Every structure is written in C-alpha cells, then in structure tokens.
Amino acid sequence: MNPVHLRKAIVADLAARLPAVSVQPLGGRLDEAELKRLAVKIPAVLVALMGVDGLESKGGAPHATFSLAAVVVCGTGKKGEPADEGALALAGAVLEALEGNRFGCDVGAPASVRAENLYSGELDAGHSALWAVTWNQAVDVSNNIQKPELDDFLRCYVREAGDGPVTQQIHLPGPQGPETETA
Image (cartoon, rainbow, N blue to C red; front, side):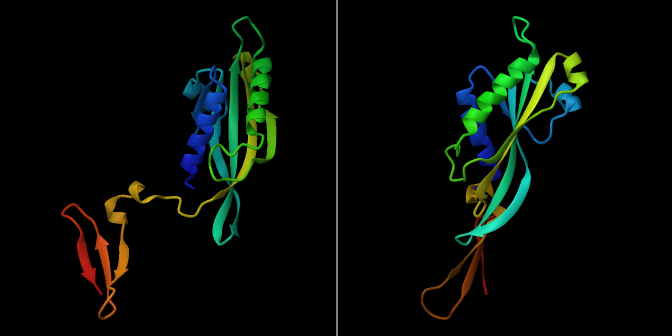
C-alpha cells in the first residue's frame, strides 16, 4: 500500500467521524511556528506520517511499521471554554476512532497508541492548545506504486516469445508510441 493512500484514508475516516472539525493531512511535525504559519482553521486534526519504525517480511511481503500522528489543535470555545478542555475532548474522540480501526485498508490495527499534551506558555498566551495522538500501524508496502501512477518513461515490461528461440522484448512507451528492443 502506498503511504499516501493510507494517510488519505485516515483523513477521510476522521473527517466523517468528526464533521464539525477540520481534518487535514500534515507534511510533518507541527510546532508553534508552523502553527502560526499555517493559520489552521480550528478546531482541527492534522494527520501526519511521522516515520517508519521497522520493516519485516510477512508471507514474503515487506511490512513496514508506520509511525502516525493526529495533531489536535483547539482554540478558546465560542462561549469562552478553555482551549485545553476542547483539545482534551477532541483527543479523546480521536483515541476512540483509532480503536481497532484499519481505515478501510488492508493494514494492521493501530498499536502503541499514545496521547501527549503539547502545552506551552506561548500557545496558552495565544489561547490555543495542542495534543498529539500517535500510533503505529503495520502496512504491506509491496506494490505500493501502481502502474497508472508512474510516468511512461518509468514503465517497462519484459515478454518472452512463446515459440521459437528465446527472446526478450522490452517495451518502453513514449511520446511517439512503444519502442521495442529485442535482446
């Protein structure tokens, strides 16, 4: 499975479960400076693939253990509720959504789930609160790039002729059509 597809599936699942929340993909770590730069619509949940923590073969296929994060961002509520209370409630909703969730993909269930308060005085002064919900998920990473996703110049295949001498034909599609080279 392509990691991009897994992140999209997680974003779609959380967005469906949390319709009043802005759920978006995130390219990496979120800190105070990045939060200000992004000007995130809050409340928000930002989903990121943080890294890979291990690779093992299962049934002959490589399975990577992805480290994922859902960063919860909240501000002061409409009726003046403290930002940390909203962040706690939203972090709890994300935790509930993770329980056994494979997000419609052929992946393992979330494991090593944690939630961490990213409080800082600077954030509090801006009336914002951050929590990071992190987990690991095992993913079969074989065949993670599908043919339509590759540019023509990257696609090639080898075909042996069924009769006669053994030959290999390599077809490289290009702008003028397939070119064939026989070895």
